[in-house]
Image (cartoon, rainbow, N blue to C red):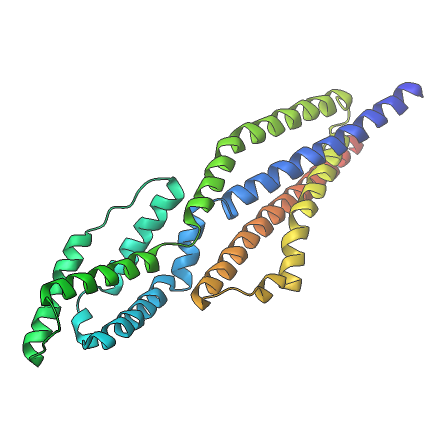
Length: 279
C-alpha cells in the first residue's frame, strides 16, 4: 500500500513538473518563432504594404520641400521608385536588426536628383538669388536626409539588440528544459514499467496542460483585441504592429493546437494499451 501511494505521488509530481517544462519549452519556441524573428517582421511589413505607404509619404514631403523653392514634383520622377524604397528600407531594417551598418548609393541618388533639377530649371527658365549650384546642393542634401529618415525603421537598433540577446540565451534555456523533461519522462517510465497505459496518461495530462498554457494568451488577446486600441502614429506603423502581433499570436495558437493534438494521441495510446491488456 505504501509503495503504491509512493508511486502515485512520484507520478503526480513528475507529471506536474513535466507540464511545467513542456509549457516553458512551448512558450519559448512560440516567442522565438512567432515574435523574436527577423522574418516575422519582414512578413508583417510586406503584408501591410509598409514601404508602399512610406513611398507616398516621402513623395508628399519632397513636394512640400520643393514648392517653397519654386520646384515642382516632376523633379522627383524618376528620382526614387517604390522598388528602390522597398530594397533600401528592407536592407536598412536587416542591418538594424543584425547590428550592422547600411550603405546605400547616396551620391548616385543625389546625382540623379540634381540632373532632374537642372533640367527643370532650364525648361522653366528659373533663376535664384545666390549661387544656384550651392542652393541645389543644399536642397538635395535636405531631400536625402528626409529619405534616410523615412526608410529608417523606428527603434530598429533597440529591437535588434533585444532579439539578439534573447536568441543568444534561447538555446541554453530550451536545452535545459528539454533535459529536465527527458529526466522526468525517464522517472515516469521507471515508475510505470508494467503499465505503459498509465505512463501515456500521465504524459498526456502534462501535454494537455502545456497546450492550455500556450493557447490561453493568444485566445484572450484575439478575443479582447486590446492591441487594436493602441494609439500609434503614423498609420502605416500602426498597421505593421497589428499585423506583427497577430502573426505571433497565430504561431502561439498553432503550437498550442499541436500540443493539444499530441495529448489526444497519447490518450488514445493509453486506451489502446489498456484494451490490449484486457485481451
